[in-house]
Image (cartoon, rainbow, N blue to C red; front, side, top):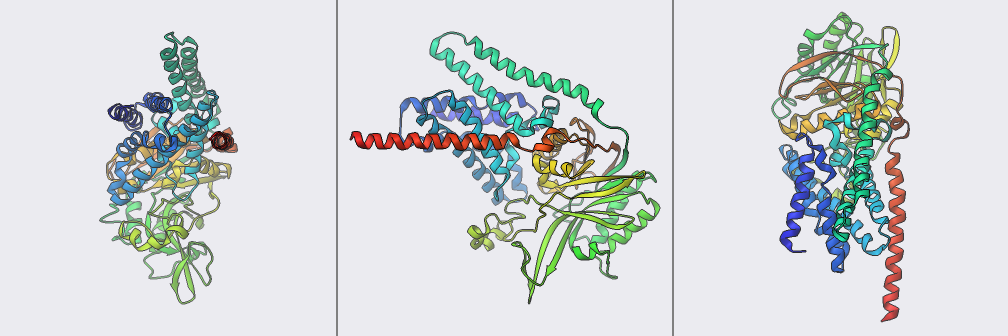
Length: 549
């Protein structure tokens, strides 16, 4: 393949990926985005050149780089070095997956296995990308339908990996349709029928589900909620205002929306940004004169007026130990170690009513990836805007017990980045959450695509779990999302405001909540078997060539 043709195919593929992604809102393009890369792989196979993995990777990487660059450039508003690392590394990993598939295509002559292996390899990559230290699943294929959740109501059964399966299957069917026509000169009616059925049947199923969801959604337990968007500038204000001043701002913003029936006030991540002792919170011990805790006395004054109110707050907490209690503790003095957490807490008339520590941390910012391997880079990472240590994490997705009209309910709270992780989000529901909240601080990225994309992902989580989602962002977008993924209310960016809404507690658990990312786990098994098979064939061919020579 000529170099200019190779670049053109990569450009087309990269732009199709890019403009299918939100907020551009053209997700239909994703059904064709892989086609140029498949034709590149075919031409490389016909040339029968050596080093198929390397060639497959290098000849697909530009497309993935374009996709990553245009879609996630906004990371640079927070850290340029982090943005460069994420964009280059993620596109490189995606290229490696394509290179591995191309390499296996060369070894395995049974053509029916090629599409199966692509689906298995890619879904395995996305699943592993959800569950390792360099996790960055922002561009997992199934997320593309976040702007049109009415297309994928069946995510309540499959999760977002069902979307990845759908996308790859349609791309492959259309590729083989074009390939058949090119090879035989005849129209591939069977492939065309398969394409349209594969496209339409999931849409029809989704439409039926969408129409019937309301019949299955309980309206028996209403929860009056206020979602606060405090709009504190993370660069200029957040760490200069005291905790008391931060809480006063929350109270001032929410006050016009409060009533004696208010059950839940959801505040953003970093509502109380300066470190406070977790043990003091647990034991409701708020030392006099300590400005870190004085904000809770302000909350007490509101709760005395509205005793049914439960606050969900984003906190920065720490815990001291006289021993190395976890891998994330750091020295805090002679014989002392400290663990620092990004925490969600619940506060009501019973004082501090539970906590949950963020368990999916942002690599490089909240977590040092592979500390044994990269620990020596600690000082350099700090200079680049990252962290040379890791925050502490929770091992379980805790829920907060609240009481609404005499009924005991539970609230789940995903912190920021965690709203990308479908299976993790579902664990809150599996652990009893009747309503879900997302607290985040997207203002680091300014008014870019970043906060818009992040908001849309919560719509998919609502579909997967069939829960109302109350999303509180520091600067926008905040909103209220139905179990269908429909947005009931939404704020503007860079606006100090609040929303008031009535949502309903849900008890049912979807198939996806119960079983998690089962499709991806099945893909892992198929990918492992396919890779072993290709490796065996490569070994046999190698020995055959040696014996022949």
